[in-house]
Amino acid sequence: MVESKADQPRLLRLKEIESTIRDQSNEKNLYQSEAPAGYENLTFEEKNAGKYMCTFPYPYMNGYLHLGKSKQHLDAPINLNTYPLSLLHPCLTN
Image (cartoon, rainbow, N blue to C red; front, side, top):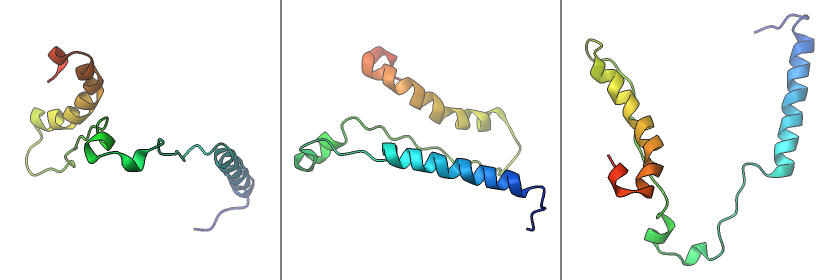
């Protein structure tokens, strides 16, 4: 795609903003974390104790649209948002 000359200053400004943000994130190491001390000595159960996995069905249409389709797309976000509550009290589980 060929850009017009009117778009070049805007494109240059966006590239400047991108490089500024990239430099800031590299300085602060935003996307890097260190494993806790002694992590390699933990057992599999101890490493995965605080993790929760939720799967989400990929949307596809194999029939007429009905309310069940919208429910299946809401199940994963609802479960993920209520999971911390289940840690507080066993009566709050699904």
